[in-house]
Image 1 (cartoon, one colour):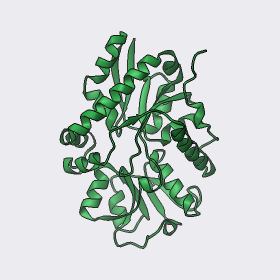
Image 2 (tube, helix red, strand yellow):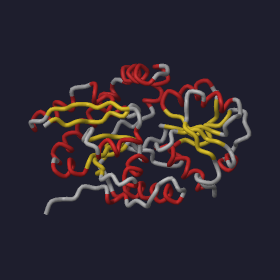
Image 3 (cartoon, helix red, strand yellow):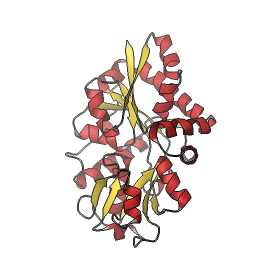
Image 4 (cartoon, one colour):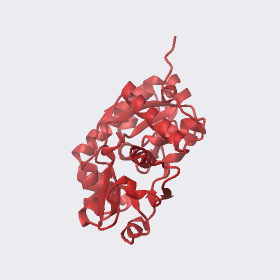
Length: 288
């Protein structure tokens, strides 16, 4: 059997796993081989798992919730430690937005469907506003920084080298860091039939994920060069961004499931999810 791992472009752990021999070595004693499927949009992960394009993948915390809401039968396998410095909601350095309530009626650029949706929805909710009614969410793009500086949008959410560059140059001001609002974990999940039929493969892959993180933590300049080559941006900014990550893989816990449930309830109330989701349904059933 060949185990196919989905590599979402913005997931550094999976990127490093795909460039090292760790997964192959982890699965060889089980008689399995490994293939990698590279793709660009994390919001499609649930559908790609269901379609059998790959068996195992990882994104931020929102796509698996959306996958459940869309009827995809997924199973959580592991999560990263919280990433408090991973991203931030930025506003114009000299602009009029000084609190979340000042975003009302404005447009915010973000990765719609990513963890950034959860961050914005919760920040707004905590300020008595609604993601669905009080702001206009729009997909971030290469012009987002300029539009923010020009006052054409009220805010934007940034991560990685994009965030590091904004902080280095002073071109924007941090309104909220992701860790001020949400845990902002990287989440690894699989198709249910795969996870329940071959739990030993899942366990081996989780071990390989931590090994990939160990490599990154010990080789930040090289990891930064890989990110700059794959995603653009300056290697120095990527090194700053990657240095802020915890590089630690943790098991799926009740506390994590509670985080996901809170997010699912909030996103459903905001009208982002088509139906309610029970996060605890996305766990593997034990035999017996």
